[in-house]
Length: 192
Image 1 (cartoon, one colour):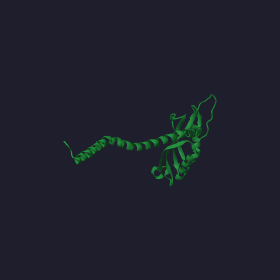
Image 2: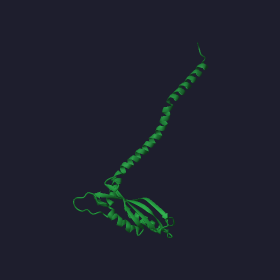
Image 3: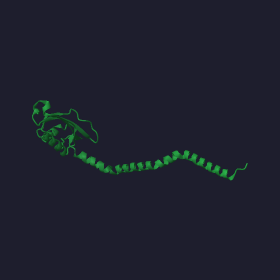
Image 4: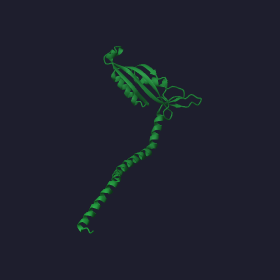
């Protein structure tokens, strides 16, 4: 059986197309994976660069943390810091505070001998006094965090805060501090 040259050419072309189609179908997942490889590689390179930057900056971060810890007030083990924090808070508030409550328990140690205690205060005064107190508290450089602040207008309480232009409320400030081990002698606390 002899095939004409034209049909033989068509058969070769058809077989070539079928082989190419099957090859593409078999290799398509690999082709897609290879095309996504470049994107994944770029993402991995970016993550590696970020991780390297973090590793390179670790000594500086550790030094900054140590400087922060060194700047915190330090109290002997077993001594509550409230005796020095309350007068400083009252002096900073400038007559804004009406009642103070000191947290019963100090919060647990978090990192590197770091503790905190909470002081809850009721206050009454003008908005300008409150803003000045909050600004002075922030500018003082004490490691403190006001986690709760409530404000009531003077007309809603009906009491002494009902005076025109007066507001009242409650806030809780958490102060950070460190403990120093006691060595038989009396250690003094650095002021906040």
